[in-house]
Image (cartoon, rainbow, N blue to C red; front, side, top):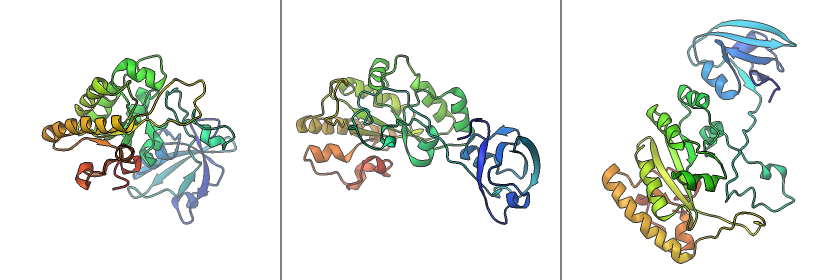
Length: 299
Protein backbone atom coordinates (compact mmCIF):
# COMPACT_ATOMS: atom_id res chain seq x y z
CA UNK A 1 0.00 0.00 0.00
CA UNK A 2 1.20 3.49 -0.81
CA UNK A 3 1.97 6.01 1.94
CA UNK A 4 -0.93 8.20 0.75
CA UNK A 5 -4.08 6.19 1.41
CA UNK A 6 -6.03 8.36 -1.05
CA UNK A 7 -4.18 6.98 -4.05
CA UNK A 8 -3.11 3.56 -5.19
CA UNK A 9 -0.29 2.29 -7.39
CA UNK A 10 -1.00 0.92 -10.86
CA UNK A 11 0.81 -2.41 -11.19
CA UNK A 12 -0.25 -3.43 -14.71
CA UNK A 13 -1.99 -2.02 -17.78
CA UNK A 14 -3.91 -4.45 -19.97
CA UNK A 15 -2.99 -4.51 -23.64
CA UNK A 16 -5.45 -2.86 -26.06
CA UNK A 17 -7.37 -1.33 -23.15
CA UNK A 18 -8.56 2.24 -22.62
CA UNK A 19 -5.71 2.75 -20.16
CA UNK A 20 -3.18 1.54 -22.73
CA UNK A 21 -4.56 3.94 -25.35
CA UNK A 22 -4.17 6.77 -22.83
CA UNK A 23 -0.54 5.70 -22.25
CA UNK A 24 -1.05 5.22 -18.55
CA UNK A 25 2.00 3.42 -17.18
CA UNK A 26 2.91 0.94 -14.49
CA UNK A 27 3.96 2.89 -11.41
CA UNK A 28 1.50 5.73 -12.02
CA UNK A 29 -0.77 6.54 -9.09
CA UNK A 30 -4.55 6.39 -9.45
CA UNK A 31 -6.00 9.13 -7.24
CA UNK A 32 -9.70 9.44 -8.03
CA UNK A 33 -12.53 8.63 -10.44
CA UNK A 34 -15.31 11.20 -10.80
CA UNK A 35 -14.00 12.94 -7.71
CA UNK A 36 -14.15 9.79 -5.57
CA UNK A 37 -10.80 8.84 -3.94
CA UNK A 38 -9.62 5.37 -4.96
CA UNK A 39 -8.24 3.64 -1.88
CA UNK A 40 -8.31 0.04 -3.09
CA UNK A 41 -9.42 -2.34 -5.84
CA UNK A 42 -13.03 -2.34 -4.69
CA UNK A 43 -13.28 1.43 -5.10
CA UNK A 44 -11.80 1.09 -8.58
CA UNK A 45 -14.16 -1.70 -9.65
CA UNK A 46 -17.18 0.21 -8.39
CA UNK A 47 -16.47 3.72 -9.67
CA UNK A 48 -15.10 2.75 -13.10
CA UNK A 49 -18.42 1.28 -14.29
CA UNK A 50 -19.97 4.59 -15.43
CA UNK A 51 -20.00 5.62 -19.09
CA UNK A 52 -18.35 8.98 -18.45
CA UNK A 53 -15.31 9.15 -16.20
CA UNK A 54 -12.95 11.85 -15.03
CA UNK A 55 -9.94 9.90 -13.81
CA UNK A 56 -7.14 11.63 -11.93
CA UNK A 57 -3.71 10.00 -12.25
CA UNK A 58 -0.36 11.25 -10.99
CA UNK A 59 3.11 10.47 -12.30
CA UNK A 60 6.24 11.74 -10.59
CA UNK A 61 4.13 14.22 -8.67
CA UNK A 62 2.39 15.62 -11.75
CA UNK A 63 -1.39 15.16 -11.97
CA UNK A 64 -3.23 14.36 -15.20
CA UNK A 65 -7.04 14.38 -15.47
CA UNK A 66 -8.32 11.97 -18.13
CA UNK A 67 -11.81 12.48 -19.59
CA UNK A 68 -13.10 9.05 -20.66
CA UNK A 69 -16.21 8.03 -22.61
CA UNK A 70 -16.84 4.28 -22.63
CA UNK A 71 -19.52 1.62 -22.52
CA UNK A 72 -21.24 0.94 -19.21
CA UNK A 73 -19.24 -1.64 -17.19
CA UNK A 74 -16.38 -1.60 -19.74
CA UNK A 75 -13.11 -2.13 -17.90
CA UNK A 76 -10.55 0.66 -18.13
CA UNK A 77 -7.77 -1.93 -18.07
CA UNK A 78 -5.87 -1.22 -14.87
CA UNK A 79 -4.52 -3.63 -12.31
CA UNK A 80 -3.80 -2.19 -8.89
CA UNK A 81 -1.60 -3.14 -5.97
CA UNK A 82 -2.82 -5.64 -3.40
CA UNK A 83 -4.97 -4.35 -0.59
CA UNK A 84 -3.31 -4.17 2.80
CA UNK A 85 -5.27 -6.14 5.37
CA UNK A 86 -6.82 -4.12 8.17
CA UNK A 87 -5.58 -5.35 11.55
CA UNK A 88 -7.83 -6.59 14.34
CA UNK A 89 -7.80 -4.64 17.59
CA UNK A 90 -9.79 -7.17 19.60
CA UNK A 91 -8.39 -9.53 22.21
CA UNK A 92 -10.76 -12.46 21.81
CA UNK A 93 -10.41 -14.96 24.63
CA UNK A 94 -10.38 -17.86 22.14
CA UNK A 95 -8.34 -16.21 19.35
CA UNK A 96 -6.40 -18.89 17.46
CA UNK A 97 -3.50 -16.49 16.86
CA UNK A 98 -2.79 -16.32 20.60
CA UNK A 99 -2.86 -20.12 20.73
CA UNK A 100 -0.23 -20.67 18.04
CA UNK A 101 3.14 -22.06 19.14
CA UNK A 102 6.28 -20.00 18.74
CA UNK A 103 8.49 -20.27 15.68
CA UNK A 104 5.81 -20.33 12.98
CA UNK A 105 5.60 -18.14 9.87
CA UNK A 106 5.01 -14.45 10.65
CA UNK A 107 1.65 -14.23 8.78
CA UNK A 108 0.21 -16.81 11.20
CA UNK A 109 0.53 -14.25 14.00
CA UNK A 110 -1.38 -11.52 12.17
CA UNK A 111 -4.98 -10.88 13.22
CA UNK A 112 -7.09 -9.46 10.41
CA UNK A 113 -10.41 -7.63 10.70
CA UNK A 114 -11.30 -6.45 7.22
CA UNK A 115 -14.85 -6.21 5.91
CA UNK A 116 -13.52 -6.04 2.34
CA UNK A 117 -12.06 -9.53 2.68
CA UNK A 118 -15.28 -10.66 4.31
CA UNK A 119 -17.06 -9.66 1.11
CA UNK A 120 -14.44 -11.09 -1.24
CA UNK A 121 -13.40 -14.28 0.55
CA UNK A 122 -15.89 -14.95 3.34
CA UNK A 123 -13.59 -13.93 6.20
CA UNK A 124 -15.42 -13.43 9.47
CA UNK A 125 -15.26 -9.97 11.06
CA UNK A 126 -16.63 -8.69 14.38
CA UNK A 127 -17.37 -5.14 13.12
CA UNK A 128 -16.12 -3.70 16.43
CA UNK A 129 -14.10 -0.96 14.72
CA UNK A 130 -16.23 -0.44 11.64
CA UNK A 131 -17.16 3.23 11.19
CA UNK A 132 -20.29 4.89 9.87
CA UNK A 133 -18.28 5.79 6.78
CA UNK A 134 -17.44 2.11 6.33
CA UNK A 135 -21.10 1.16 6.72
CA UNK A 136 -22.11 3.72 4.11
CA UNK A 137 -19.46 2.41 1.73
CA UNK A 138 -20.68 -1.16 2.18
CA UNK A 139 -24.20 -0.07 1.28
CA UNK A 140 -23.17 2.15 -1.64
CA UNK A 141 -20.91 -0.47 -3.21
CA UNK A 142 -23.26 -3.38 -2.35
CA UNK A 143 -20.57 -5.39 -0.54
CA UNK A 144 -22.91 -8.29 0.15
CA UNK A 145 -22.98 -10.83 1.68
CA UNK A 146 -20.77 -10.21 4.72
CA UNK A 147 -19.79 -12.71 7.41
CA UNK A 148 -20.08 -11.48 11.00
CA UNK A 149 -18.68 -12.98 14.20
CA UNK A 150 -21.38 -12.24 16.75
CA UNK A 151 -20.74 -14.74 19.58
CA UNK A 152 -23.24 -12.90 21.79
CA UNK A 153 -25.59 -9.95 21.54
CA UNK A 154 -25.58 -9.51 25.32
CA UNK A 155 -23.28 -6.53 25.87
CA UNK A 156 -21.16 -7.75 28.79
CA UNK A 157 -20.74 -11.24 27.35
CA UNK A 158 -19.69 -9.90 23.96
CA UNK A 159 -17.22 -7.49 25.56
CA UNK A 160 -15.70 -10.34 27.57
CA UNK A 161 -15.42 -12.70 24.60
CA UNK A 162 -13.93 -10.07 22.29
CA UNK A 163 -11.71 -8.46 24.92
CA UNK A 164 -13.12 -4.98 24.32
CA UNK A 165 -13.97 -2.31 26.89
CA UNK A 166 -16.83 -0.43 25.26
CA UNK A 167 -20.14 -1.44 23.72
CA UNK A 168 -19.56 -1.60 19.96
CA UNK A 169 -23.28 -1.23 19.12
CA UNK A 170 -23.32 -4.36 16.99
CA UNK A 171 -27.09 -4.60 16.61
CA UNK A 172 -27.33 -0.98 15.44
CA UNK A 173 -24.73 -1.67 12.75
CA UNK A 174 -26.49 -4.85 11.68
CA UNK A 175 -29.81 -3.03 11.51
CA UNK A 176 -28.32 -0.32 9.29
CA UNK A 177 -26.85 -2.90 6.92
CA UNK A 178 -29.89 -5.16 6.71
CA UNK A 179 -32.27 -2.19 6.38
CA UNK A 180 -30.21 -1.23 3.34
CA UNK A 181 -30.30 -4.65 1.70
CA UNK A 182 -26.96 -6.11 2.82
CA UNK A 183 -27.12 -9.85 3.50
CA UNK A 184 -25.33 -11.09 6.61
CA UNK A 185 -24.21 -14.57 7.63
CA UNK A 186 -23.26 -14.85 11.28
CA UNK A 187 -21.42 -17.18 13.61
CA UNK A 188 -21.33 -17.95 17.31
CA UNK A 189 -18.27 -19.61 18.82
CA UNK A 190 -19.87 -21.39 21.75
CA UNK A 191 -17.99 -21.28 25.06
CA UNK A 192 -19.25 -23.51 27.90
CA UNK A 193 -20.75 -21.47 30.72
CA UNK A 194 -20.24 -18.15 28.94
CA UNK A 195 -22.49 -17.63 25.90
CA UNK A 196 -24.65 -20.75 26.01
CA UNK A 197 -28.02 -21.28 27.70
CA UNK A 198 -30.12 -18.13 28.14
CA UNK A 199 -27.41 -15.94 26.60
CA UNK A 200 -27.43 -18.10 23.47
CA UNK A 201 -31.23 -18.00 23.34
CA UNK A 202 -31.24 -14.21 23.45
CA UNK A 203 -28.52 -13.99 20.81
CA UNK A 204 -30.31 -16.12 18.23
CA UNK A 205 -33.59 -14.37 19.03
CA UNK A 206 -31.98 -10.97 18.42
CA UNK A 207 -30.45 -12.17 15.16
CA UNK A 208 -33.70 -13.71 13.93
CA UNK A 209 -35.33 -10.27 14.16
CA UNK A 210 -33.19 -9.27 11.17
CA UNK A 211 -34.22 -12.24 9.00
CA UNK A 212 -33.97 -12.46 6.00
CA UNK A 213 -31.23 -9.80 6.20
CA UNK A 214 -29.42 -12.08 8.61
CA UNK A 215 -29.73 -15.26 6.60
CA UNK A 216 -27.97 -17.81 8.79
CA UNK A 217 -26.34 -18.42 12.16
CA UNK A 218 -23.52 -20.95 12.36
CA UNK A 219 -22.65 -22.32 15.80
CA UNK A 220 -19.12 -23.63 16.29
CA UNK A 221 -17.72 -25.18 19.49
CA UNK A 222 -14.73 -23.43 21.00
CA UNK A 223 -11.37 -24.82 19.92
CA UNK A 224 -8.39 -24.69 22.27
CA UNK A 225 -4.74 -25.67 21.91
CA UNK A 226 -2.16 -26.49 24.57
CA UNK A 227 -0.47 -23.15 23.93
CA UNK A 228 -2.57 -21.08 26.35
CA UNK A 229 -0.12 -19.98 29.02
CA UNK A 230 -1.23 -16.70 30.64
CA UNK A 231 -4.48 -16.67 28.66
CA UNK A 232 -8.01 -16.57 30.09
CA UNK A 233 -8.86 -20.02 31.53
CA UNK A 234 -11.37 -21.74 29.26
CA UNK A 235 -12.45 -25.30 28.62
CA UNK A 236 -13.91 -27.28 25.76
CA UNK A 237 -17.25 -29.09 25.75
CA UNK A 238 -17.50 -32.67 26.88
CA UNK A 239 -19.14 -35.12 24.45
CA UNK A 240 -22.20 -35.20 26.72
CA UNK A 241 -22.44 -31.40 26.70
CA UNK A 242 -22.24 -31.42 22.92
CA UNK A 243 -25.14 -33.88 22.76
CA UNK A 244 -27.16 -31.65 25.08
CA UNK A 245 -26.37 -28.64 22.91
CA UNK A 246 -27.52 -30.49 19.79
CA UNK A 247 -30.87 -31.22 21.45
CA UNK A 248 -31.10 -27.67 22.81
CA UNK A 249 -30.50 -26.11 19.38
CA UNK A 250 -32.87 -28.52 17.64
CA UNK A 251 -35.75 -27.20 19.75
CA UNK A 252 -34.89 -23.65 18.68
CA UNK A 253 -34.57 -24.71 15.07
CA UNK A 254 -38.06 -26.20 15.08
CA UNK A 255 -39.44 -22.90 16.34
CA UNK A 256 -37.57 -20.94 13.68
CA UNK A 257 -38.78 -23.33 10.99
CA UNK A 258 -42.37 -22.54 11.94
CA UNK A 259 -41.77 -18.81 12.33
CA UNK A 260 -39.36 -18.08 9.45
CA UNK A 261 -39.77 -21.06 7.14
CA UNK A 262 -36.08 -21.98 7.52
CA UNK A 263 -33.98 -23.63 10.21
CA UNK A 264 -31.89 -20.43 10.60
CA UNK A 265 -29.41 -21.88 13.14
CA UNK A 266 -26.91 -24.51 12.04
CA UNK A 267 -24.48 -26.45 14.20
CA UNK A 268 -21.09 -27.16 12.70
CA UNK A 269 -20.11 -30.73 11.84
CA UNK A 270 -17.72 -30.70 14.79
CA UNK A 271 -20.63 -30.90 17.24
CA UNK A 272 -21.85 -34.18 15.78
CA UNK A 273 -18.42 -35.70 15.21
CA UNK A 274 -17.15 -35.00 18.73
CA UNK A 275 -20.46 -36.05 20.29
CA UNK A 276 -20.30 -39.26 18.23
CA UNK A 277 -23.73 -38.50 16.82
CA UNK A 278 -24.55 -39.21 13.14
CA UNK A 279 -24.47 -36.16 10.91
CA UNK A 280 -27.95 -34.91 9.99
CA UNK A 281 -29.37 -35.16 6.50
CA UNK A 282 -29.01 -32.50 3.83
CA UNK A 283 -32.34 -30.92 4.78
CA UNK A 284 -30.76 -29.82 8.09
CA UNK A 285 -28.60 -27.25 6.28
CA UNK A 286 -31.18 -25.62 4.00
CA UNK A 287 -29.01 -24.01 1.28
CA UNK A 288 -25.67 -24.94 2.93
CA UNK A 289 -25.00 -21.25 3.56
CA UNK A 290 -21.92 -21.86 5.70
CA UNK A 291 -20.33 -24.98 4.31
CA UNK A 292 -16.91 -23.30 4.23
CA UNK A 293 -17.29 -22.68 7.96
CA UNK A 294 -17.53 -26.41 8.56
CA UNK A 295 -21.33 -26.52 8.53
CA UNK A 296 -22.34 -29.42 6.31
CA UNK A 297 -18.85 -29.90 4.89
CA UNK A 298 -18.76 -33.58 5.82
CA UNK A 299 -22.32 -34.24 4.71
